[in-house]
Image (tube, rainbow, N blue to C red; front, side, top):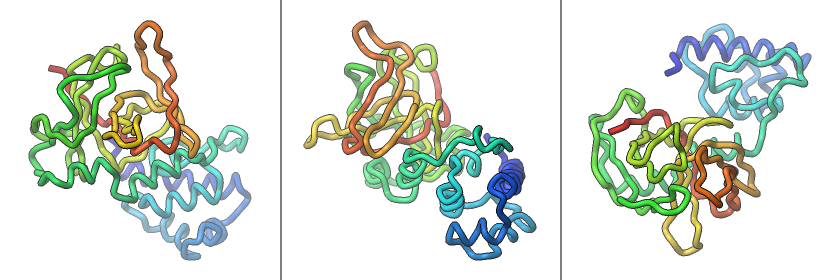
Length: 248
């Protein structure tokens, strides 16, 4: 788990590198992103806590860098050609984090406990490891360290063998619905397969997301199934980052 001081240091180093890469200055970096003119300068000089998501998103989008450089410990390259760009999936991810998602709405009917995490889904899975995210609580577990102080954290059971060797059938994965994610991270995606049906849940590896489509990867597809899965963007309800797991 990333410690706050290390993330603050990384954010400061990447802001300083961004100034050099974009041949800019602290004031222009801030004002171009519609932040206060001293925001970047104040952060570099005084910050002891990580930058909040919203100003980080504004800076990343305005200056065309992936949000990963400001929300995780990932050094910003000095060569502009090597910098990952800000993409639609970055913005979509933060939209999910900023607004109440169907997962939070589903869980809102349950009173969250600081000591328990609620496990949702259904007892049996379908093709591709699919399960129905129908809001039914199957059981509760003691809150694991990976969900300590995580707002609206929840869990789901893995169904099937499509994610071997990462997750086995019956494993529990723990989810932080407001935490940013990127390519290669494991996620729980809610997809409305049928327009009037409850969403289906998928435990997969995230590849990319745009307004047009969500792309996921399964590690051990069954015969006749594709490793890469594509879903229309308008059928995607939410994509939430997996932060831990437990095998029985």
